[in-house]
Length: 146
Image 1 (cartoon, rainbow, N blue to C red):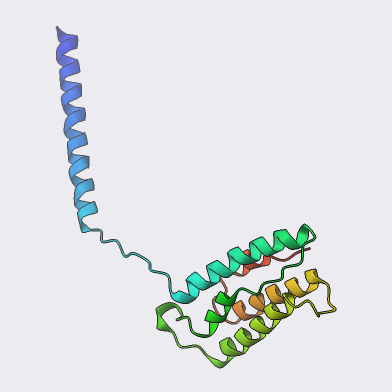
Image 2 (tube, rainbow, N blue to C red):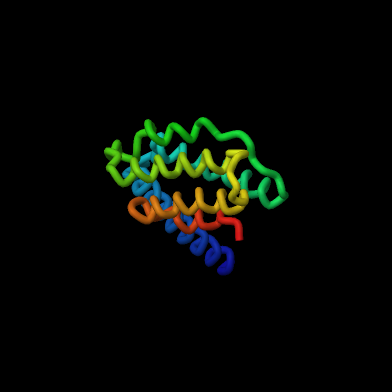
């Protein structure tokens, strides 16, 4: 009989503590407001460019030469930056160099090896990102063909 009474007290104690913890948890959750991140047009474009370059890298390693310039890349001139930040002269200059290097990569008349043209385009990305928005540099470097 004592053991049953002891177990009843223990279970009562545990259940009381759990309900107090749940109440605290609910109160904390009620006060928290989610701030949903919405990527900018430029962020979405850069992600798309990354995916395209992943595929290009695979093609080039397999011995294929890409032949169609992705026209979406031209949106680099018009896409809005994060927090509607204005584009500066450095960004505009790198954008032009990047597009030129991308077009050269898809050019059949270039005498440079495709691997070199591809890596030059990727290095342009890295150079631009080293002036601002340095976060993705490590990820971009993985696109280089060794």
